[in-house]
Amino acid sequence: METLKKYHQDINITPELMQRIQELVSHYPEGKQKSALLPVLHELQDAHDNWLSVELQNKAAEILNITPIEVYEVVTFYTMFNQKPVGKYMLEFCVTSCCAINKAEDVMDYTCEKLGVKPGQVTADGLFSVVGVQCLGACGYAPMLQLGDFYHEHLTKEKVDQLINDCKEDKITLHDK
Ligand code: FES
Image (cartoon, rainbow, N blue to C red; front, side, top):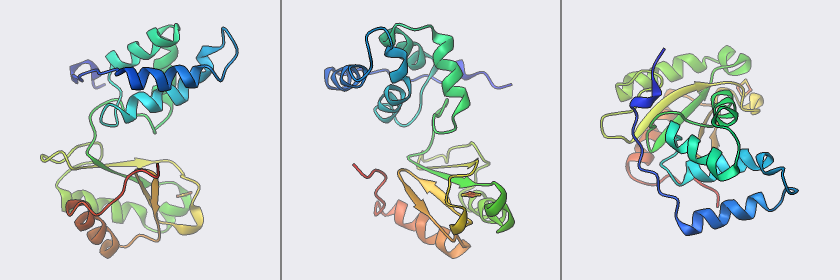
């Protein structure tokens, strides 16, 4: 099993970030700050290149006054949290039932080959990573992938080519806020 401690991350909890976290925690009753864990982890991840090192997870525990293991349990359960560095453009291919039947793995393999990476790896320029994830709830549009906050559906190799070109030319918006 891969040790994640080897991945170093500069942690930067700015006053603005801490204010957003405190605002999130304020939505929950006194003593129930653990309930804010998911949105807090999203805030921390968004502010740290889309991944959460062990140190940053420990920081989340410290901020919420809970034990580190309570954070690790959540981070290791959800694929939306990344435990090691990812590319600026993380292509998350759904590889579950409907997408699998519609040849998602062929398109994903093609993408990996084109980018010269295996699933879970980052390209040398830090731009791309490719991962397989479970159903993203867009089964009627299979095969599909998620990139940032957006879905790309009815994928073909040609669509992947276009998407990669658009990323390289900085034409892709990752977030809807
Ligand atoms: S099976 Fe791929 S989105 Fe549901």
